[in-house]
Length: 195
Image 1 (cartoon, rainbow, N blue to C red):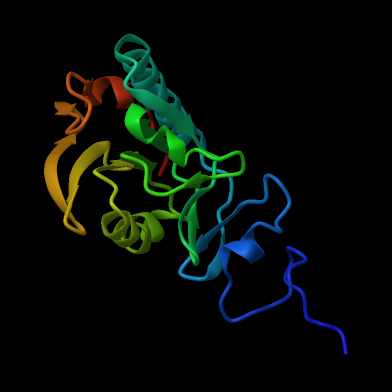
Image 2 (tube, rainbow, N blue to C red; image 1 turned 90 degrees about the vertical axis):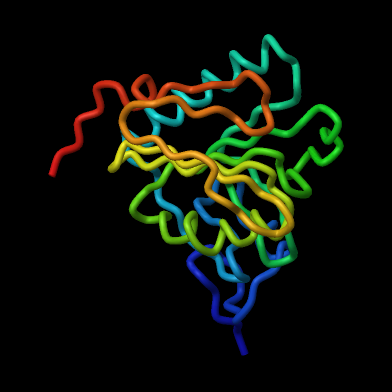
């Protein structure tokens, strides 16, 4: 009797674990969310423009402050046996760099940034957000290219609480990176969405 395989070549199961996930070929467009292999297609152009702008600001800040490590997707972040995500941007504080392993980040980054895409917004706003809160992410940014908004959430005691929200214009301040401020107008400048 042969096993039924998914399109990834992994045997079909009700619940997948990190052991299954680690069998995927490098670069496979999947995340392990709630024990399910969720395909995440390539992001849209504006998503990538915003991602690069935010990454540049975080890298420039970190180059001066030397406060930790900034990493961008695709990189596996292992939270729990059934939860391995690829956040758009993560920051890990200097005193926690030990969670960086050769194959993955093992544990919650200090800061997670997710730029919403139509195919992943539900997970970013619901399932992944709950895991980020439960596992100890201290700061979570949700960046919405459609609304041109940035929301900053404070992670504490297993919950995420909205701390700041700007739309199109306005400045957000990091809760954990003292001195990091980002102007929304610069992040979303000259983005034209087609309807």
